Amino acid sequence: NAGVTQTPKFQVLKTGQSMTLQCAQDMNHEYMSWYRQDPGMGLRLIHYSVGAGITDQGEVPNGYNVSRSTTEDFPLRLLSAAPSQTSVYFCASSETQQGAYGYTFGSGTRLTVV
Amino acid sequence: AQTVTQSQPEMSVQEAETVTLSCTYDTSESDYYLFWYKQPPSRQMILVIRQEAYKQQNATENRFSVNFQKAAKSFSLKISDSQLGDAAMYFCAQETSGSRLTFGEGTQLTVNP
Image (tube, rainbow over all chains, first blue to last red; front, side, top):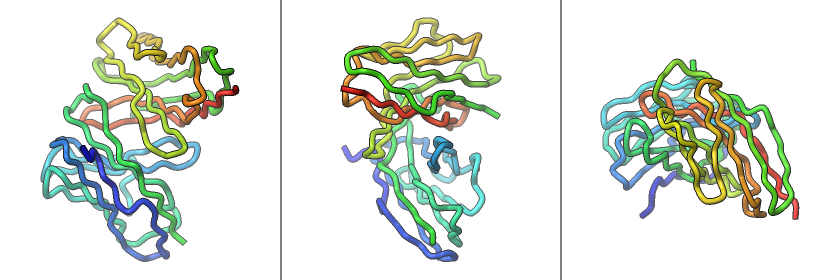
């Protein structure tokens, strides 16, 4: 029972570099999403997916890309990192559309862009 | 747009006493879920309690209960018999269609021995 697995846990990037944050779940959940957490602002939705092949933008999508080729994986790509993307990133999944069973979160990735 | 507001950035409570964390939200939807999540220093997001909007009865999970006032769009969390392990950041969240969560800013709870 791994739940939601995020890698890496920590990352330092230079401005302009690209990278992919990995997210995988083994619960066969249809719904997956990415959030960023900044001090004093709670968590904000970046992108989400309601199933394989279907993605959509959340509240703060600029500078991030996603794809969902399988039910299990939902990677988040930073194409050209900027200091404003320094944050803690969380991936989450849920079984149903209306969260009757709650959402399962990964342990987060702390990203620093210098 | 959905908004969730937690007006108490910090709260403190004595061990074994009761504390209430406030949350208000704004939505035009008639059916939705509300959640309280706990985030300890480990950074892990832990579900504390959830409430479905169409259910009148307030949700309860052991020492945690909510006061859900749908008309007032208020969703407060009461922690009874507070324990040292309850110290954490608490987030209120509302689910919108498509399995998306809107979070409040968080309340940092300190439990004093």
